[in-house]
Image (cartoon, rainbow, N blue to C red; front, side, top):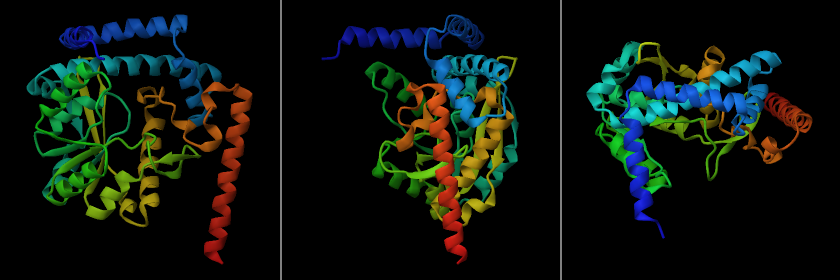
Length: 325
């Protein structure tokens, strides 16, 4: 049975943290990250190191170590900023957006009235973008409840404040999003996660992983405009939003081909700003041969990854030969 007092304590603690000025939140996060980096008080560092070795093998050990520290600091800062953003008024959050790069892409897409799919990877501080986007369009967003009832109430209330329609992460939610896009609305999809059910084996940094095709299917079936959206904090207690159109090839071929376009764009973004990606997610275990990837030695991990890569390349070569025959 849930303890009501515990739930109340969680709620008020979140409210207290969220009401601190954003510069204070950033200082707290920086201090906490310093402790994590110095004393290695969590396994986050080793997870990030392994992910970086897979995704950015060209880095030296020294570069990877430095990038790990930056990634931990930036990710923790994003989490503290989320609380602050969820508590602040819509107008306050809009004021925190100091510059929008590529704003014309959103306005051009909305003028077509074909719907807009905003592809938002786990990168930077994505929660700040809702308030700004909601000024121009009605959003329908999938929402998975947080396990803690108090935390869930806090987050849900914050996301609903922008007049967004929150739908469940199931077939009924997908149907509602399709309907909204057909009516010229907008949805936000975070594509770089492992689906709980189903999924296709698609390459991410050269490793085939269980992947949801939802983003590509929404875009291809509705012909909605597809935009990559991300936010990076600046040194003036605010943020800058970046909006970039996805390659038009996303409308060609099947859903797998469309998803490949999306992941190519995400990989390109990560290569440009690797320190802002949320590397702590154990994404690379979404392969039957890599389920224990984060619990084995570096040598065994390297061997397994090499085998997976070689097998995938052989599969693709065979498939290409069959198509040409």
